[in-house]
Image (cartoon, rainbow, N blue to C red; front, side, top):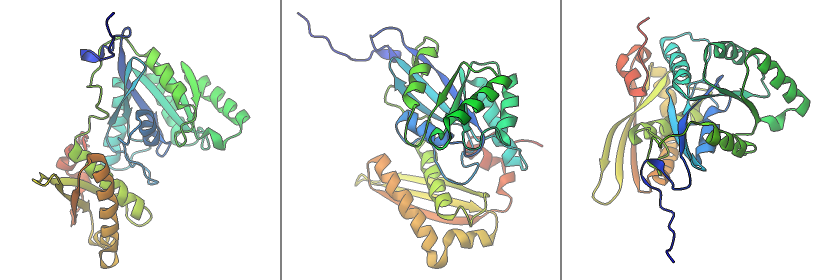
Length: 314
């Protein structure tokens, strides 16, 4: 009698039937809860979250294994009416991600319903031909009859394969979404190694985490025009890592806000970011933050490349 072992073979062949894989783009208005949902479905933090609108600027891919499927979630920037060059790049990136995906997941904040940008996005989805599912978020805050009315109204405009009612914050209904996608995605080998949860380079993820802490600390004071880049990453002999990052702002007045009185703000941001990075990297982190003024950085092609965005020429 031979002993069976459950060791995954190459390309995601788990030995338990055919594997499935594919890309699922999350589309929605700003602050609909896309990043929170991606982190919930992946089971780890791959996308930053804050109260500030338009926190996600480029596509972040979070990779989850469910049953025999590898599901690659694409957290896209929130879609809104663009006013600046950076806004246009973000919105273009979001729609591009949707058109490149195998499945579209349209996320709606149930409390806000089809107000504002959500209605505009729904109209835009008429031109996207991939299969689509509707996900109503924050359903614990809305009456059941209102959820049914919202579901009917949305499906009158665009036909969705299925509707799911969830709470990204507490996880209610999320398992149903995973079950459905695992069976609906096409058969095929997995795109990434089984233990990989994101395709974001660690230097960029580190910058994103610091940007999250910046927004969480100063979202009511610091304007949207701030950006973080990891400039140095040095693995040290004692097993620790030294990370140097630059926070770019557009004016001296913004630099003063980022630094805070007696440097209190930048110290708090650094401490919070260092703590989370140490947990993720499982090693001691020495983090050094610098604040620099770079006027009109939002018109600098190099900054767009650093963020993973195409630079709009107009």
